[in-house]
Image (cartoon, helix red, strand yellow):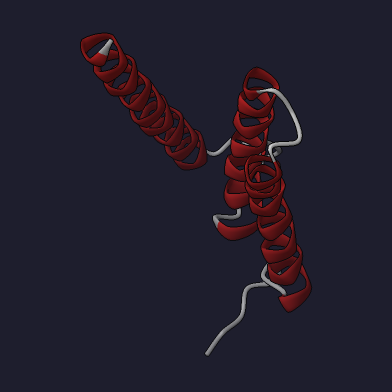
Length: 101
């Protein structure tokens, strides 16, 4: 089994640690109800964006230093999928809220 030079156990563990911390922060805030809902939502949004960056960097090995067309296409596809998922979720949730009130 060949190992690529940029794939190391240290970088994988760093990615797992960062992803775990970025998951625990919103979970802890929601569980403890430490902040008002608006501030909690903003922090959840920022940690979600940070998680996407961590996943792209540490697990998919996508960096912006290379000018490869394939990496740019993957990054664009991830952005479109993220926009569709977040936009669709918000649309459905606000529609349900509107219909129930």
